Image 1 (tube, rainbow, N blue to C red):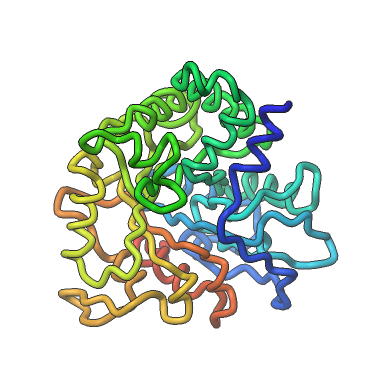
Image 2 (cartoon, one colour; image 1 turned 90 degrees about the horizontal axis):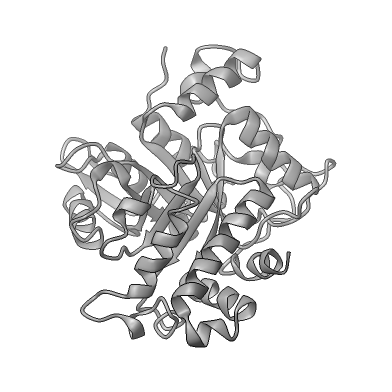
Length: 335
């Protein structure tokens, strides 16, 4: 339990925005499968879960404001997540086990097929290693990495959630000197990063034999592609298909297949307008999130799209209007 406790305290920490409560009513807005049957019926949820299991471009979001216990008397952020969102990454904390928001999350998982993952920077993973194995990390860092991978997997099992997202930004000031930062890289290769994905890959991702997700976001690293489920690329402010194509090639290191590539927009900055101006060759100037939705790599269909601080978009009218439009573009409702 000590290992799990340290992980929970350190794995989710940066940039959260804690919503106290939402005043709008929690009225479902129809999405792709909801055109077939009445929203809220058991048939609707069966179709929704089947849609989530099917092969399709996903919608992913980093959600802040989900770490509070919540209350049955108050509609909170977690209640408002659109039904057709595929993967939600906790940004800033998970709700306590047994709390109202925790039980709501589990209901959403079971009823709607939405998957939830935890996010950590590489420096956060290192802090867990130092807390759990302060002596081992100085003598056998690779074994300490194996141990922290098991701790992450144990925490995912304890919380009954769906995977792990490494926010990999090795050149940033807070990250560069960590074991997973550029300080330990030689010609772009950091053996600690590869070992982490090899170790996590035993429990999560496509090599694990489970349905658990292993995600990398920000940058990628040579050799880790076989182990990750998706590469969520922070394509913030991308303004054209050629920019997105370049990001797949440059940030994916020529290794990321198109079906694992998920470009993401920054809704902390641009939630009102759905992103920046995006020049689409057929549609002219449109919001960049919608441009991401229409775009596909020259190599084949993309894995999906996403957004950072997706919860910022709730106050739009209708709520989450850009998220919902983007999902409809990628996965049109059956009429």
